[in-house]
Image (tube, rainbow, N blue to C red; front, side, top):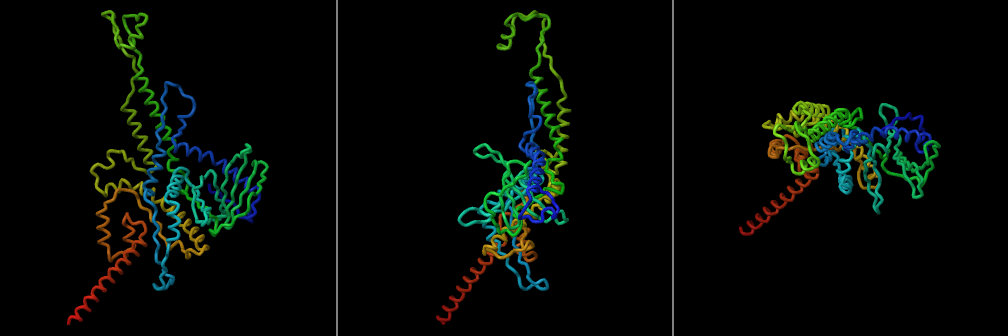
Amino acid sequence: MIWYLDREEVPDVEDLPPEVLRYLVERAERAAGRYQRLEEYYRGEHPNLKGRKNPDEVQVAVNYAKYVVDTGLGYYLGEPVKYDANQVSRNRHGAEGKKVVDLCPVLECYDAQHISEVDQEIGREMGTFGDCLELCYASSGEKPRPRSACIDPRCGILVCDSTVEHNKLFALVWDRRESVTGERYYAVTVYTDRTVKHYRSADLKTAVFSQWGETEEHFFGEVPVIAYENNGERQGDFEQIISLIDAYDGLMSDRLTDKKKFVDALLVFFGMTLREGDEGRLAREKFLDGAPLDARAEYIQKTFDEAGVQVLADALVREMHKMTMTVDMSDEKFAGNSSGQALKLKLLTMNLMVKNKMRRMEKGLKERLKLYNRWLYVMGEMDPVEGNEVDVVFTVNMPIDEGGVIDLVTRLQGIVDDQTLLSQLWFIRDPAEALKNIREQKTKEGEAVNGGAGDYGAGTAGRA
């Protein structure tokens, strides 16, 4: 959750009034209902499954909410994000003074904690809730390292000022806990640009927040909480089609209920009366003897238009995919004999959707890298790195023409720089490191060739 306050209301973020903490926690509790509803839809706990229903009615939930979120997530985060370091000139008026950016310390921290899993969780919560928070902290091992954790937006609040820049003031991570004695209380952790403080309160009415534990310092240089927004409205991927999901659930439930009633049709006998025991015998043996010659039996069945129901179901599915800008992969007309260009046009809307996600996520990932860099710089393990010195590279996870990509990269040699060409190859994770390895390999090969030529020349001269 992201909230905005006038800076005058919190002149000293290191000494927050209890009223401010109570106000923010209350706001978070009010917003939790919307987040809870969205999570229930994502998990398949739809409203039509709740409550007691008629046992003769069938209730099903078709989880298009999860389908929409996971399809988009796998499309742009199916492959781990790459970080490409640029060589930026220190002199704005000339090309000399190139600065070589070394991202190895940060990437080692990423690899140690499998940062791609954190990215996946962030992307999932962005698509589900519309926004989420990431907390950067120092690990508790013998050698502390910077780490990241995805914070549930129901339990995290990033407070920014009310200016157009929305500068970060502080952040709260809170939870309702219960002690071993059964006492329930609010636990609130406040993160500022310098410190971390822990507070407790028995309830929000009294607004008595007492600090417990010592004030801790961190070395991230600013508030170590990052906000990710799914879009400008902070809406989830499926939030605008919830009514269509409910309609589809109702249609499928009624369809199965009608089918069940169709199977459980009534058997009516004309011109005869069943004797005692005939019902059980008919159910067991599916045969009844002794009926009059003019008697007959018929089933009373409920008729329904199956084709018309399917047309309505297909229309709802099309609208859900259109409103969420996702592609129906099960559509028989999606692939067929379409050319590569035609498939790209069909994926255009989905590409537009994930491009917007990638732009917004790139901003947060650069902010994370900035926090890690600041922490490692204070520890003397890394030089300062500016945001424009690093490119965040997303790999769209879709079938590619491997031979065509290799052919394109080969033909562009000498026109485009080698590092950019290497970044186009799907199997190269770190283009800068790959370029460095190529140069080292060429240097060793050159030394071997020159050394062999020198020995050959000396031997020839001796023989002469």
